[in-house]
Image (cartoon, rainbow, N blue to C red; front, top):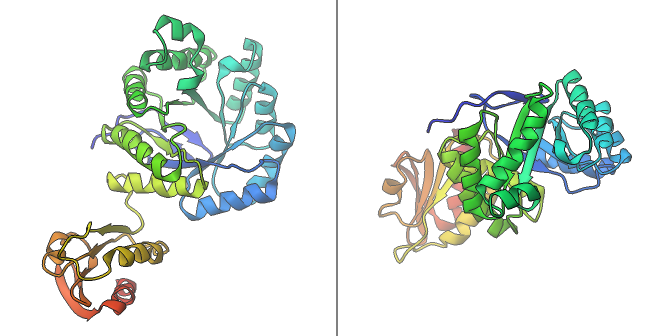
Length: 349
């Protein structure tokens, strides 16, 4: 698929836009001033491959904590600022790698100028974020409610404020909890500017429901070549957000790292406990850092054939199964040994 070429910005060591890899972000749900808890959560996010993390800065103590947090983490951190420009300035003072802020809600033009000046001096980027619930009243009235036009023009007003101050290290998000509205808004914005886009479906819900909504919305946009960085918004452990985000990228061929697991949906030909084997395989294989495709198939009749593109896999039989590579049978083993034998074969690869 062809990605739209956007302007390149930087968040810490991570480049966003252009031909750079699509980065996966998450947000801490700890008190940022609680350095120990925040660092612990960020370290867990790093372990599953998070590229950028965002933390809410709601007080001076949160801002001061940034310096201490950065000493113990390895990925860039963005400060999420609402309304108080002084917190943005303090976050910059203590070493933040980027801001999420809307210029229009931090007060007078002089305050915006101060923030922009500090960002320029420290080579920082700003994310402008418009959610369906935060569209400016003027645009709600002009465009008849919450829709793609009112969201996009609300964001464009914020962008114009920064452009007039000769600031263009900007990325944009246009999130809604409604998937079609999210898709339409990002498509419209992509046609109107070349700033990198931060994709997300806001308030997506619990891990089960939110994963589905995010996969449909973000996946559809990425398949159109739209999007430079993503965040999956789930009501749960932020680690799950990163895992889901990376799987979305893998499914579209936009991330070529780590193990990919495929499995068949079972049918009347299945004579082994495939559901439990597949579930156990997902847990066991999660820690393997090899760029391979592994297949867990239910029957020996067509398992190796259907999963011929897999680097390695298993296909069940009646109390036993086959291990195969690229569709070629390697060995036959008892059902209870299938997973362990598969692991041994993977280790050899």
